[in-house]
Length: 100
Image (cartoon, rainbow, N blue to C red; front, side):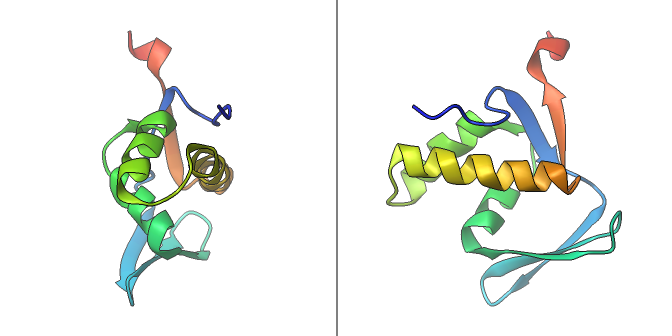
């Protein structure tokens, strides 16, 4: 099993983004950075899933039910996507330990 970035921390959408659907794909504008992003179809699905706080592990489980993909590939792709979103300040991270 791949060690997924932020696997047991909750991630959620940053409120500083405007998102729109374009031909079945999500396109985002970051108010914070002034950059545009094309999230694609699956990235857009992940974005929808993190409209409420979720862990990367929960995202992987949901995506495995919805798409024909191996667990390893799904974990790697979710990992890379969340790293990029976090790097660009497009998601907020909540430590589950701090909430207990």
